[in-house]
Image 1 (tube, helix red, strand yellow):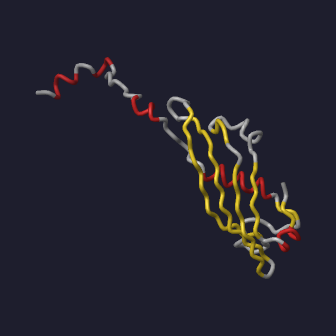
Image 2 (cartoon, helix red, strand yellow):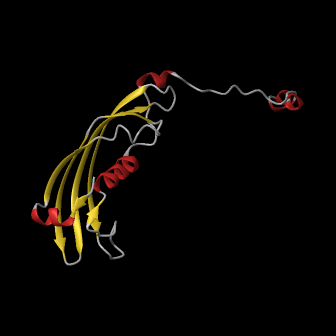
Length: 143
């Protein structure tokens, strides 16, 4: 869903809810995502637009060890700058792909690895077995 600049000039405060259920189908690490709440305030200055954005999302992520679902609440405060300057995050256009931009922030801010409480019981310990050619050297080290 695109935001139009003329709509933002008339109403600089927006509250939106976005559904990303279809967008996460190809992402195995995100099992489910509830509708995402976005609150934004726009400020126009010269040839740029600054948006103070609050993103809140409840999701279930896959545990890195067990693949069990782990509940995670994401809360992101971000200042996004649209313009033609080198400091701008995005180019300022008449139609801003706001839903896609918000999804990008969700993907970049979610943790890369989460662990289910049961995963702490799993330990991947390697047993050390020396190579047979060096097995007899252990006797010489103890002397």
